[in-house]
Length: 124
Image (cartoon, rainbow, N blue to C red):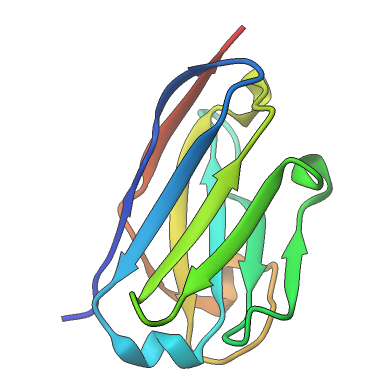
C-alpha cells in the first residue's frame, strides 16, 4: 500500500530548529516530485516547498525562503524539511505529499498521495 509517514514535529521556541522527515513506502516515488504543505487552525492548506527527483529544482513559498530547506535521499525513499529560525507563524500541521510526475508544483491538487501530518508548534 502507498504510505507516507512524517516525523520530527514537536514544540520549539522561536528561533529554534526542527527537521521533518517523510518516509515513503514506494520506491517509484524516487521518480516523482515531493512536496511539503502545512495547515494552521482556521487556515487553508499552504504550500511550503517542493523538490524534483534530481534534487536540482526546488521551490519555496516566500515566507520560508532562507529559513527552510527541502532535500531528499532517494536511496532511503525519504524527503526532509530542515526548518531553521522558526517563527510562531510557522505553527501548523505539516504534510508530506507525492506527485505522480516529476514537476515542481505548488498546488496541493497536483499531489496524489499524502501523509497524516506532523504537528509543529513554535512558541514565542
